[in-house]
Length: 386
Image (cartoon, rainbow, N blue to C red; front, top):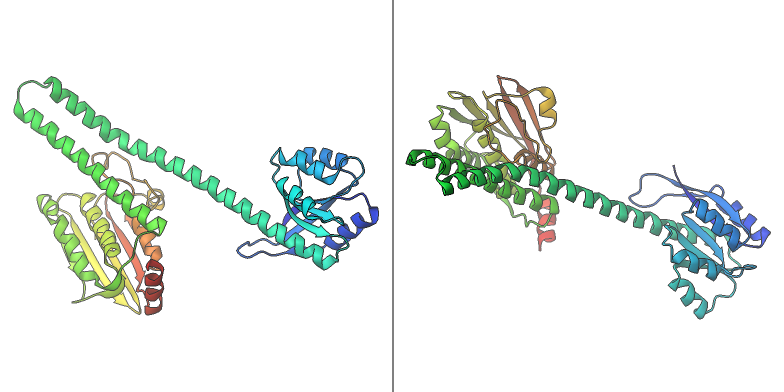
């Protein structure tokens, strides 16, 4: 149970006791909040005592009487408002004029409780204040987490872009100064290396755009019947020139059609990533087997290669953003570290999953399971995009 602290500032002993008794065993549940919320009650008989208690340990909710001996409730509220204390104040008053309400609101009061009030009215007011406080804090927490994630994302992106930019800069400086001599073939090699680096950065930008569009939910999904076999064959055709250069065979095992309700571009992202990786991380003379199955409203895509493989601890990190397996075998293989994390996010959109089985020097098998979208889900997606 999550516990919030309430400070009751009231000069009438009987009123303080009645409030404490009414809230002693009171707990509540809020929508979308897992934990039950309970309360501890502290008491102060004057504003000066309350200020000292707040300075020592700020409460979550402040039940503050308007009329107090010495410093008034409004005066205390004014002192607290200038310090931006993280709590909500509920004014207790038997003198609820419009002028009092305006002044109290300007100084930060959240709500009012007019004397005399019943335990039910007290609990209703506490419920409303608690709901507001918890949701505000959750919003602040999410905002802070978003700021941290954005910082981490930019830091990783800058790190990933630093190496190819440094390589480009180095090659261009050599060519500008003609520092490699007069042989054209030497400079041709440098140009090829620059183009490779540019291609890698272009791939990273494309993967990044795919990832952010999917995560933001702002991409319009166009759902229709998609033949996954056709998409897989197109992905194979795209990577075939590289596979032929390295004598890598690619086989597609599927029935005449493997159809599902889906967004075609999302299926293309999955197939292009899996097939491209299977060739890129394969050994010369190896093989790639692409297998498609449709059964009971699900489509399963399995891509097996005979490549370099990976250890179990490496495989466990594979589907996170910007994660690439870096070792001696992958040192010269370019990649963004975003492709497989995007595949996972797309699989989740279809209520599916992506898994990998791998063994070092023996190869890897990636399996993606997708639930075909029902007509009701298709209608919901189209309405959301409209």
